[in-house]
Image (tube, rainbow, N blue to C red; front, side, top):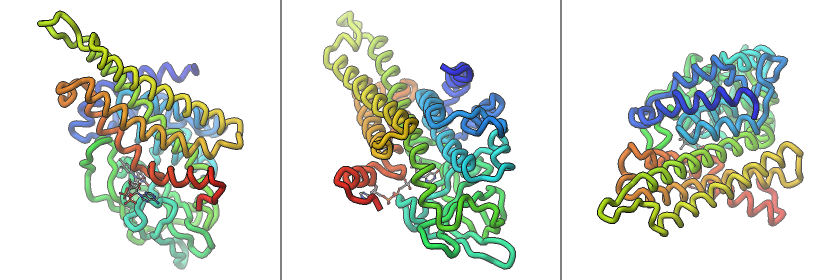
Length: 372
Ligand SMILES: Cc1cc2nc3c(=O)[nH]c(=O)nc-3n(C[C@H](O)[C@H](O)[C@H](O)COP(=O)(O)OP(=O)(O)OC[C@H]3O[C@@H](n4cnc5c(N)ncnc54)[C@H](O)[C@@H]3O)c2cc1C
C-alpha cells in the first residue's frame, strides 16, 4: 500500500469517523476533512507530479473514496466529485489551473445534471453564447455536489456553434450570475451540499472552455465516465463494508439475557450477515476487475465501467436493507450507524448514469447496438 494511504487511514478513522453522525444529522459540509486532505496534499492525488500533484490515477482515487465511504458517505461523494473534476482539468485545463488543482487550491465538482434534461447528464439544455469579448453561460443545474463550497465547477452547456451535444467549461463558483439559493436537506448524503445552481448570464473567457466546442460528450464518455463510475462504485462498496462491520459488531454485542445468548447465535442472522459479505465481496471483485480493465486498456473496459456502477448501486441498497433487518429495531436509532448508510446508499442508484440507464447501456452493448 502506498505511503500516503497511512494518512488516508488516519484521517478516515479520525475526523471522518468522528464527524460522520453530526454531518448527517445537521447536514453539515465536512470542511475539517477537506482542510486535512488539502494539508496532506491529497486534493492533488490524481494531478501530475510535474504540476506538483501526487501523480496517481483512477485506482488510487477509487481506493481513497472507498476508504472514506466506510465512515461517511457524504465525504466520499464530495471527494468523488472533486476527483472527477480534477480528472477533466488534468487533461484539458491550462497549466495554471492544473497546478492550482495539484496544490490543493481548488475543490472541484461536476455541474452536469439540469432541470431540463434531468438524469440525461450528457444532454444539457443550458446555453453558451459568444458576446463581443467573452462567452455568456445560462443554465439551470439541478444538483451540484459541494455547490456552496467548491471553488470551480466543471460546467456543461450546449455548444456555441459546433455540432455535438455539449461543451464543457471551467466556471469559478464566485462568478457574477451564479446562484445556489437553497441548502441541501435530503434523505441521504446529507453533508454533501448538493443543491441546484443557476447561471444567469455568467461571463467566462473562451479560455475557460475544456476541450473543443462540441467535444463535451466525448470528454464525458472517455474521461469522466470511467473515473466517476469506479468512484461511485467505490462509495457503494465502502458503505457496504462499513455496514457489514457495524452489523457484525451489533450482532456479536447484543445479548438476550434470558437465553444467555447473543444475536449472532441465531443461524438466520448469521446467514443474513453471510449474504451481506458475499454481495460486498462480489461487487469488490467486479470493481477491481474494472480497474484492471481500465489500466490495461482491455477490450471489455467500457462494459466493466458500466457494470461496476450498476452492480455497486444495487448491491449497496440490498446489503443496507439486510443490515437494517439484522440489527432490528435498534437499526432505527442513529447510534448503530446502519440507518445513515442505508439512506446514503440509495443515492448511488439514481445518480446519473442511473442504474436503469446503465441497464439500457449494458443491454445495448451486449446486443451490439450503439449506446447513443
Ligand atoms: C445526492 C446527489 C448528488 C448529486 N450530485 C450531482 C453533481 O454533483 N453533479 C451533477 O451533475 N449531478 C448530480 N446529481 C444528479 C444525478 O446525477 C442525476 O441527474 C439525478 O439524480 C437524476 O434524478 P432525476 O429524478 O432528476 O432523474 P429523472 O431523469 O427524472 O429519472 C427518474 C427515474 O427515471 C429513470 N430513467 C430515466 N431515463 C431512463 C431510461 N432511459 N431508461 C430507464 N429508466 C430511466 C431513472 O433511472 C430514475 O429512476 C446528484 C444527485 C444526487 C441524488
